[in-house]
Image 1 (tube, rainbow, N blue to C red):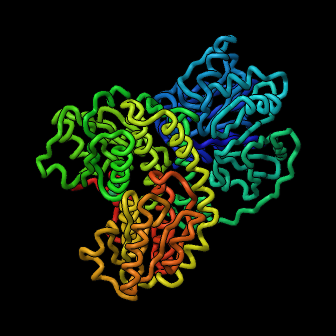
Image 2 (image 1 turned 120 degrees about the horizontal axis):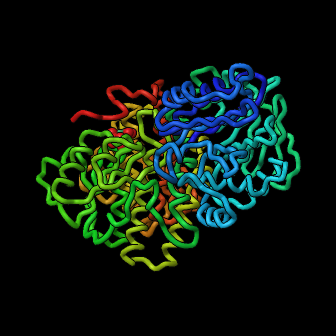
Length: 616
Ligand code: F6R
């Protein structure tokens, strides 16, 4: 995730862009930059680090006639590195060889390697390792006096999901922005126009917005905005008045960060999955220069270490790695691991999963394993975190900053990352036929879209369930196979934000004790998505119903068998059975959220909990 912004108007652009970038910093903060049309030139300043570093660089950078005529047109970027290391050369804006076209980009250009080779053959000189730079170079190659035309031709050549804003010195009063999947919204002031990844970036200046649809491009001039569709036809788009207060704006219009983050999951998943997979073939994890695939050579066992929600992601990882890569996998709660004198060493690949990369116990467990000779990977959402410094390599999730204490989008991105790791291991070990790998890659790449579809229709079915179960004293969750970690995660979500007592079990274990807890007042949440074990899950559902419990089943859309045996179903779209946890957990996040809200609690700040646990 990166944040992009553009301004064209009558006021000094620098302060407006910097103010907007501050509101977008949650999307990325490893480097930042802005380009301003100033004194007949484009002045571009970039800096590694957060926006304070950019501000300092701007105040010491040479100025072109800035005092007499401060720039009123410019673009800005705050980066979350995907392609290319964190350094000034890879920071945006990116510029074509002539220096006349500048762009800021969010997202991923999947076919950038081929495009880059072609552009180099045609004489372009690249100065960064990024995929984004091809957009600047391509724009320049198509430019013949019409930036909007060049953007349309460029879009036709790009694969991937991205949004960008472009600026060309030959048309200094114009910005052209475009979107494919990644977010983009336009702000319409009286004699000024804004464009950004999210509304809060310009909310201090205008509350009138037009939303840009995927595939469209938009021309912005001071006080005028023209939206064009794929065919070049001008599109009329409704002007929406945003009535959010400052606090709501920070939450992107949602009532809480947790809800915003639940709804951001498709975006983070696309960023985590898309450029690491090649449609029709396999997986490539060698990104960001942080992950050397030789770490995966000759692995004899995988050990996953994590706490809380991240541990549940590790449990799913065990099923995927064992099934696909046929490697033995141990998954351990990090706080227990180090006191067990574990048997670990050369030949073991240790994966520490931690969204923050700072959990004390996970770090301690990773260090112990490394000291005993294992190679260690940090699977984390936090670039440069301690976990990455203590490990031999880092595999990043790209969920963007998560503020709600209860992990949601970082969990689904962790699942995506462990699936990618499992598939890559399978490829390297030749344990799956190429056709099956291609099928799984396709299924993985389809997940962001399925998550969007799921969330678009989820609230009514969750609301119907909340209506009758929100004041229960105890919930029990159960599942089988990959449904077990989903049950554990659903149970954790509900207890931590609603303070309801919950438990989770493999459904086959119910008869061995937990069934004694059940009576007519107990809601039981059953993970009953399509799988070879579904018939067994249905038998377990019947057992708990025979004790009077009321069952809420998470089912696959179109299934008609489970509904006959339960009080309520919440459907998720169909996918490969191994990937189903990534969809099945989302209704459980929303169920926990809506129950907590119904009980008058603040899910963003549950009592007694902290976002990052940096003590033992
Ligand atoms: C639960 C939750 C925690 C964290 C755990 C590990 O919603 O957020 O259980 O998953 O504290 O944190 P990280 O992933 O930062 O190591």
